[in-house]
Image (cartoon, rainbow, N blue to C red; front, side):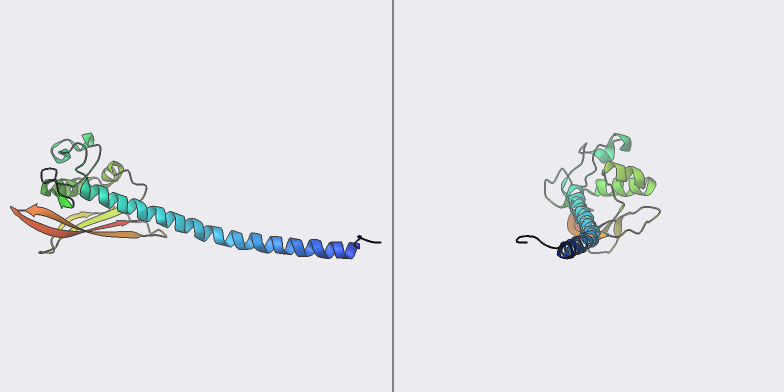
Length: 170
């Protein structure tokens, strides 16, 4: 009986193998939902930063979109195209963005090509006045909320002012 095992030894080894296989499968199944949630959260953080960068450092398309019909706007951006400075916003674009967002949030969201809901607040650094307060009418609470804070500058009544832009994506 060399090199032969009994049925009991075979049954024991199969049971141990199946036990380890089930244990590993269970561990993987509990790990995957957390992993997928973290991937979604990271994607949201990335998209929020890209949106803040687009709003602050892109003039939009067309460049003078605040003068045209909002339906003809392809891309929103708040950069002052006449100054050619990074993080320097146009007062006219700020006013136009606030007006359009308060009238039709969903259209602004569509122009920004966002999958998530967002809120945008632009607060003057000296006076505390809120220049932009853009948010949806109904808020849905989700697992992840990403907040991006950016310091911006803009010209107000002929002098340069600064402010803080707070962008939340959920």
